[in-house]
Length: 179
Picture 1 (cartoon, rainbow, N blue to C red):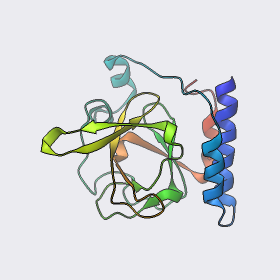
Picture 2 (cartoon, rainbow, N blue to C red):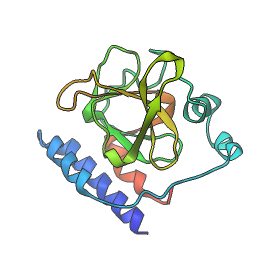
Picture 3 (cartoon, helix red, strand yellow):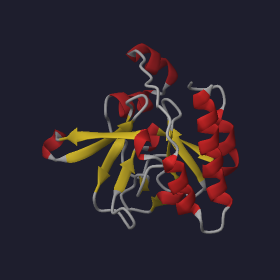
């Protein structure tokens, strides 16, 4: 119950930032000051496979990558929030999304740094930093240090690892799902 109330408050702040006039970054700062525990979600391979499409499972739990310019959200310009496609944890705001030219949705900052985890990824003879959901561990993509101000970061993500919630529906995502 506590988690639902805090999540709802967080989502109200996010929604308010879409309505405000140029004060989005300070609203996001306020959101980042809200502290609540993220309860880990652990499911078996068969449970995840039942809930996700084949592509989603391969991207999020086998660390596959969708082809550039093929994902649903790489060119999405709507205002809203991107949540983890596996567990629904709010992860990125359209207000921090930018056109990177890579063919994948790119953001310069997550909604809350506590909502994403990172780890070194040296597969394919490259040193990269992998990004995953802090709640369920689902692989989302990678973060690079070639992004725009104010962070200089580029969270380069797979559309298959995300679900987009339009701004007008943001307040609806704090319900009974994903306690």
